[in-house]
Amino acid sequence: MRILSYSYPTALLALALLLGWEGYCRLAGVEPMILPSPSGIAHVLWLERAAIAPHVLATLGVATLGFTLSVGFAFATSVVLHFVPWVRRGLMPLFVASQTIPIVALAPLMILWFGFGLLPKVLLVILVTFFPMLVSLLSGYAAVPQAYLDLLRSMDAGRVAIFRRATLPAARGAFLAGLRISATYAIVATIFAEYAGARRGLGIYILAAKNNFRADLVLAAVVVSAALTLLLLGLLQLADRVTGRRFRGPADAAG
Image (cartoon, rainbow, N blue to C red):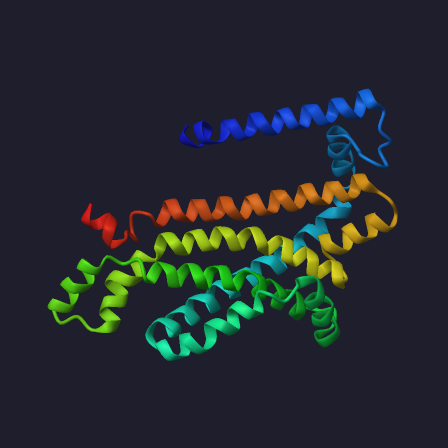
């Protein structure tokens, strides 16, 4: 019931937008080649379900693998940067600089260097999703209450024990926020990598539809992309609920 109470304003606004879009297409007589109606997109998505399904699975597989590896790398890197300050001072400017590289320039280079296989697409997903999670984790590590740290130090707790008992639980909320941000990028980064060069995936499906001037197929793929992103966010929300009671931060515990 809480989910319904939170989501019904969004559902109403989305329904109003779709009805307005549908009404405009029908009343203004817009050519479906230019702007297909929502009902037309839903119809072509149903007709193309068998053709688009392998592309959806390919995109979902790359995004899941890249996102999973990115989470692991971000966590391992954040631990190193937390315990070794001089490494953090040296690497953080480089990580920030890496975010200034346009993905539109990087994706074709990845394909050129590593071919049309799985590796360049996974690397691109990692590059796009790694930094938000790393920054979120480091911010979370810094959010542990000083009084809690002082208490543990007064009990002769070492750095590892403090990290495990105070710092890591305190970063849980920031980590989940970073996960949600990165999850929204993972599908988009995968599609863009496929768009630059792939044998299968929503990116190559969109490219083929665009070359055939099929705006309805392009928008159908966009709908599927949005659905996949919402699916990832839903799974993260579920993981948050399941692990919420097990991993409570120091502030929560004090409350």
